[in-house]
Length: 339
Image (tube, rainbow, N blue to C red; front, side, top):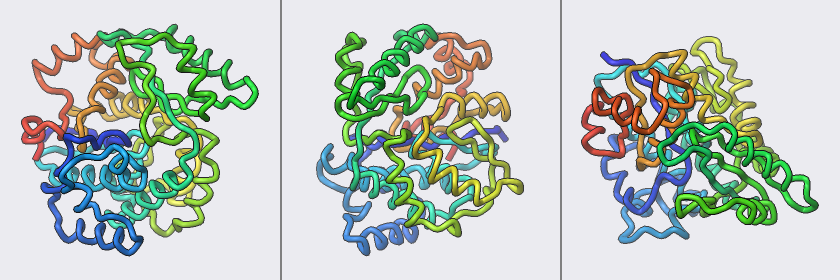
């Protein structure tokens, strides 16, 4: 049986092509529970959102809708895995909440409470925003100097009066920055356009993983008790690259990290993948749905980690052709390999 690391995606992965994804959710009773909780909170059900005739950016990317949709899709995919040994679980940004549930530190129901609560609080406040920009070229060659340049620009902008800009997520070959409107606009003006779409503002995203989210973190701690959390059943890799081991993880510390550091400090997804590769040496990296957009960041993170000698996009693609290293459950033909 192949060893695999399960990777849970974050916000921005449920797009128009993902409409209808919950039709394959393996546990109707659990989905009904999620819908009932949403109805009790006067929120549109996940079933209704997922079965909508058309995709609405205004509706489907809202934090109070997107977070719960993504969580349900990810959890559903994790429940259908067969023939692989999951040796560790990690996630990107909001995917950390999904990872907690997939690793058993939260029950599926408690995971939903955490995700739906935090997604709703984020949407109600909607403090700041995010912009994403690459520091690798189109063949994914690492360029540490370019990354340093972009961070230096952000640091300078952050010193200006009424401007806030800070690192948010290290996402493979992408840098996600977050801040207030003045800070984001200044960065967009300071950086030349690349690849016809960067720098790219992320729709309906707040300034995640920065100090601007401190009020949301406090609201989350007030709304969600520590008793929701328990020992993980699988090793968990967080947004610092730290491992939470079954049997030795303190639930109080896990709670504090999840509703503290994870909300207000930068999230290093690249470090999480590096730890997954080097500490667990899996045969496969399985990315749960929805969507397929996290694949590039995972591959770039492996390249940045010098995993199995890969140094470029071409290296990764050659490796994938020989013997798939990465399985994206958002692709039916790849999904079939692990379900």
